Length: 189
Ligand SMILES: [Zn+2]
Image 1 (cartoon, rainbow, N blue to C red):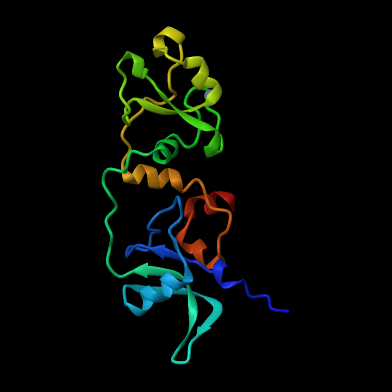
Image 2 (cartoon, rainbow, N blue to C red; image 1 turned 180 degrees about the horizontal axis):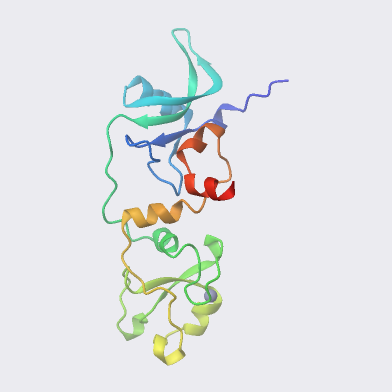
């Protein structure tokens, strides 16, 4: 019986040149094809391997499980204003009832409603569950006594990275563990 996992489940964890993941959430993973290509283009160093070997007539190599970019990529100083990043800033929790929800059950709320001149910006949009969103409706916070737990703000890339660390993906190859979730592992032991 062949116990080696199929190739599609052999992505490589991609680290920046400082050996921190390029991104925690979503975790920076490249397909084995992209990883092998980057190795041949000499853009990355291989840090760790899978047992898997890929062969062609002219070469064979063990698949990389962790690679590190040779050149440091600075992260964008101002993260993009997207629904996902708003949810990530607010840790996927409704800012009114302080309850975490899966992404598809979350909406976002304009603290100052659009009907009252509120803009769709980092500093006026918060994560909300649909129940709270419905109750708040077109009210100003003081009119319905609903105030977001944290006043909405423009997060830095670092803050979003840190929040992302709290959400490990379902699958972690053992060779990735040295580069991930150091503090949560320490707390668990
Ligand atoms: Zn809520």
